[in-house]
Amino acid sequence: MHNDIAQILVSEQEIKEICVKLGKQLTKDYQNKNPLLVGLLKGCMPFMADLSRQIDLKFEMAYMSVSSYHGGIASSGDVKIKMDLDISIKGRDVLIVEDIVDTANTIVTIIELFKHRGAASVKMVTLLDKPDGRLREYQPEYVGREIPKAFVVGYGLDYNELYRNLPYVGVLKPEIYNQK
Ligand SMILES: O=P(O)(O)OC[C@H]1O[C@H](OP(=O)(O)OP(=O)(O)O)[C@H](O)[C@@H]1O
Ligand code: HPA
Image 1 (cartoon, protein in one colour):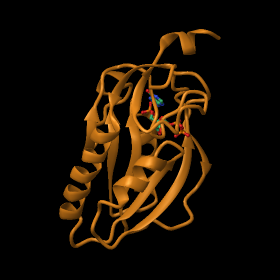
Image 2 (cartoon, rainbow, N blue to C red):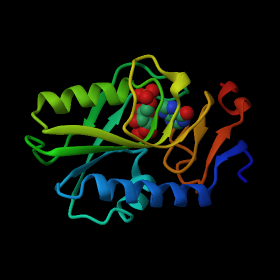
Image 3 (cartoon, rainbow, N blue to C red):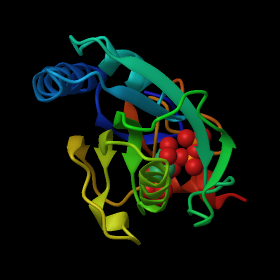
């Protein structure tokens, strides 16, 4: 385990099992549709790569780079689009792929935007859901694992752009983010 991690919350093995389970469910639910999977960068990267290979359907993938955590462990509440989609979502069944829903500032903002752009449907799949972190009311349609209110890193999730490469999700030691 990495020295800055206090505890592993979701192991590599559990992440694999989550991807298989969600992949099967999405394959069933989107059977007669041609969904557009939209990954919110950067955190979605490993999850989108692993989950998409468990979905047995014809579908497209697109990416948008969105950020509201400008360093540190608190949401700024200001959701910035750093890179927009390169495809129209008008009339499409959009499935947003996220690593985590915490305050829900990001997902609520993006869903409003996608509806405004004329998507036929907008749902989301998230690896992690932290319901105790909510500042806005929101319930994701597809959840890999609920987690308690702790700052987590790994498998795409970062603290100041670090730890995204860890193969598991772990709780960051508080002394790491308290030392500044
Ligand atoms: O529910 P919320 O409180 O809005 O938090 C969730 C968002 O925060 C993280 O992104 P971040 O803004 O850190 O950008 P990143 O994906 O580039 O790390 C994460 O990837 C989600 O997009
Ligand atoms: O717990 C978290 N860790 C990393 N990024 C995040 N973005 C929202 N919550 C988190």
